[in-house]
Length: 254
Image 1 (cartoon, rainbow, N blue to C red):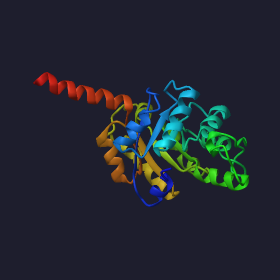
Image 2 (cartoon, helix red, strand yellow; image 1 turned 90 degrees about the vertical axis):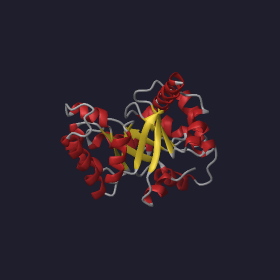
Image 3 (cartoon, rainbow, N blue to C red; image 1 turned 180 degrees about the vertical axis):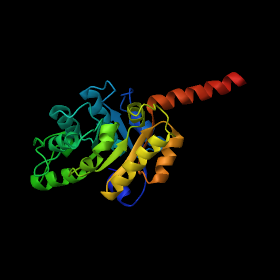
């Protein structure tokens, strides 16, 4: 499997996109062909059930394309199921305080970092473990946990959020953050720029990665220049609509 941690440790950017509706497993191979480094399956806004997500993750393993799941909440059941399907990591939406991340770490990491339930004859192990303790330690090291900052409250508590052991980085959610700041979609607004800068600098000081999810290419490039490495552009639906509109537009001009 592509080692996202290794790429990030080397200072490289990783480019992904979001699955928001399509759940045929072959979508993974299509997006791998495009060249993405990872995919986010949106189980916060999306209506994917467990069966759909399991099939997507199984295909992604065959395609060597890591899957991050944006979880619908911090409850034990969905977190446990997603990591046991073999998800490479979890994206925690609407992180407003340290406890939000601590709860996720508790459910997705084995002891001593957390208290994840131990069941190993599952997809996440390939249905075989030689040494349980070695496997558990490796799983704890491998699973990526990212928190999404989407509110003023999250900004206010950013220092204690970044101090949570097991958190790998923070992702900016520009739509909800700008809404909470009462400047919806005004990404060039000075307050929005200041908020993004705060997230980048605070994360850098704690040696955490940063990133953003957006279909706005200009915003994404600006964030990359600030030092963000985890970059998610558009979605499968957005690309399909944009590609269809562009192609049909050209035909109609003939």
